[in-house]
Length: 275
Image 1: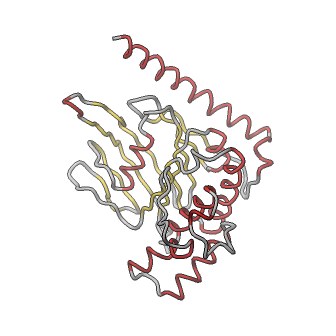
Image 2: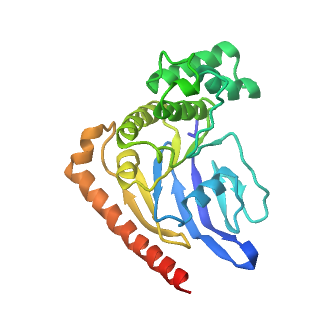
Image 3: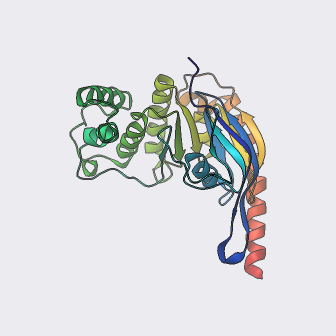
């Protein structure tokens, strides 16, 4: 059986038109994400990273080009918005139901959709919560657990729906360094066990290198591909790889590519302010 989670982005552009002024958020972007691959996207603020994710998710239309998921076109200039259960998003801001327990939050989707019975979904939820280090917290409410634990619950809630692709939009941005380090461990544990295709948006280059198989570096706006970085660090990974010579080489390669684009973005902003 062919593994799901294959994404093809073919010459995709996104043009916004606020107040009649065309703003090109993404320009002729092409990428292919293989089934079961962990892909990170980095680039300066405003380069179109989240726009790209939203187009894949079906939350935003494309102006030019096409996006395919498992050989099915999910976005083109002639198509309406097409979100689907095969593409699940975890955003920067939390979205747990505060009046439901951890277990109730995780099982809500499959129960509402009727894709699993109560016994089956409870067993699956407990299995994923165990992998995420949340065993024993099933009956707690979101306000009773830490922000890092809440983030893990959201990722488990996304995974239990069996998506082909998990789309993560800077999910750890607001966390402190220590909590983020713990989050990385549990996300890697889940990835190693579940093996889902993941597209991960981040500003954190260390995070991108540590988690991913490949890093897609975008230019400043209009965002397009600047560079691919293949992360040839064996899995499973632990925190020790972050001080390895190869990790530091890859980090420097990413830093050089992104820093150049960040300077361009800063200089453009200064010119626009001076007008």
